[in-house]
Length: 483
Image: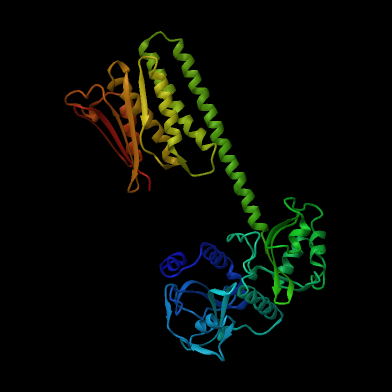
């Protein structure tokens, strides 16, 4: 199925301002679908305005759909009898004269042209499944009355409003709770869910007939929002979202001013009880902070171990023992670098370029005491899972150290690190231009502790390790799956 952007790009001639406005409408129009119990289709005119294309579609969450199939990408071609064409040409909201049958289901259809100055940007077509219409009641009447006002605002290019944008995973929807506030600021209707949310905040009376701003502020004696004046947010001066928090509960409000051709018509307020959601968020933040603190402490402990190994190495006269302790110190320091990166982020993946650059500097600084070595990275490691990063840091440290000690003449020269990701794998090549491998060299026959560590770690990660040389260079290549 095509996206709205693709349909408009392929078929329409719209200014950037108009295209952006239609995108914002589609971001917000689920509100109209839920209030009207209707499916919505956005029809945009072709460069030839006798043709219209379906650019977007939404179904209601408050009632049954009347459109079983997706229609985005379909067209209405040269059909003057179609309701969309009628609304486009007349620039007036058009209705069907009676319930039409769609797949055997009576459907009420309305077409709303979106006016911008003297032209029609697009047409919103509403399809209401009459077989699924809920029994009349105060809730249904309040929904439909708000839907009628909202449809007029769409027609007059007044919806969506400026102000706070909807956040899909937390913003309240109509079904979460709805309050209707009249032009005098008094609550004329509150759904059962809305009343329950306010009761959790501490309300002991009814909401009907109460001053909306006053009753809401009266519940916030303990902890009131501080990011903006409460009264301004609640009074509906533009679209606004606000969190009400007390020691008992959390409720999120979305406040939308409604208008008609005659002027302001009060407010539409949606509310959602977010107590459990905020509790889970606090638990996650605490968990993340704990994990970061653990990584930080592990890093500090590893750095302490590395420092102790360094001190021990200085007190030993045996070159072989001194070298072994020095190698152990570098391995511990390599692991510490990974934990330092993990302590600074919440992610389960590590941007390994930062780790690699620190490790290369560390290896280069140690090698600089015996010669002139340049450690160069060309390419990117990308993001690496945290459980792979520790092993990979040790692998990279051993390969670079091995390249310096055994591959470069008199420990001077250049070591290239060439990483890239390909088909779900990380491929890392460490190349030096010094001494070639001995004749008949095989990794399995090597007595090098460093190569043994690399082989073991790569095997544990389910990867491959290859070491080869030619007349120009010696290359160690590691392939590790990341998926």
